[in-house]
Amino acid sequence: MDYSIRSLDPSFVSNGIFLSCQLWHCRYLLPSCQQVLKMIRSMRHLFSLNLS
Image 1 (cartoon, helix red, strand yellow):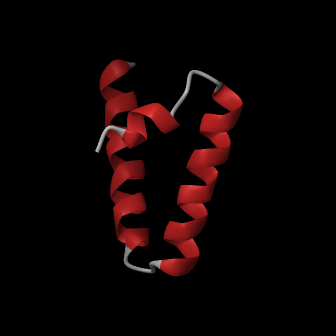
Image 2 (image 1 turned 90 degrees about the vertical axis):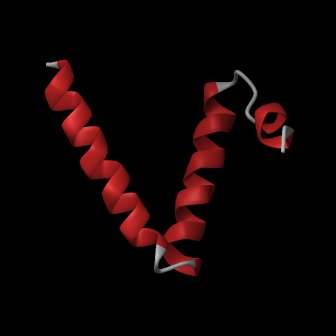
């Protein structure tokens, strides 16, 4: 399972490409993943409220 750590190199550009590919797969291939993305967004919102 350490392949994910190796594939995520320090380069921000490749990380962004990797993340956008993941989001694309979630959005178009796995409709149920929409719920996970919504949950992540709401969690981020709560975290940003707690930080400010």
